[in-house]
Length: 201
Image (cartoon, rainbow, N blue to C red; front, side, top):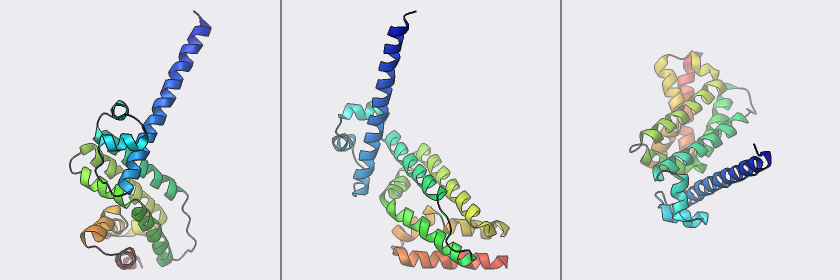
C-alpha cells in the first residue's frame, strides 16, 4: 500500500468535491438572483451565464431545472429556519406577540416574494417541490405554535384558522390574488388571529 500516493488521490478527490459543491452553490445563487429580479422562469442558459459557468456545468450539478428549483426552495426554507431560530419577542402581551410574529413572518414573505411565487407555480407540476413546500408549512406551523402556545388550546378548526393566518399560503392569496398591500394584510390577519385567540379567554 502506497500511503503517499493514496493521500494524493484522496486530496484530489476532496478538491473535486469542494469545487463541485462551490459550483452547485454558485448556480443556485445565480438562479435566485435572476428570479429576484423578476424572471420567474429562467433558462439553464440564463442561469449559466449569470453564474459564469457553461450550460453543461448546470446539468452536471442538477439533473434538470426542477432539481435546481428544488435546491432553491430548500435554501429559502433553511434561511427561514435560521431567521426564526434567532427570533425573540420584545413584549409579552398576547396581542403584542401576535403583532411581532406577524411582522417577522410577513417581512420574510415579502423579501422572498418571487421565490414563493415560483414555488406556487412549480409545485402544481412537481410532487417533489410540493413535498418540500409542505415541509416549509410544517416549519412555520411549529414556529407559530411554539411562539404563541395559546393557539394550542383552541378547538381544532379555530387552531387551523389561526395557524393558516400566519402561513405563506394565506399571505400569497391576499398579496397576489387580492392585491392588498403589506400593511393592509397585516391588519387583516391580526384581526383574524386575535378574534380566534379571544376564544381562549
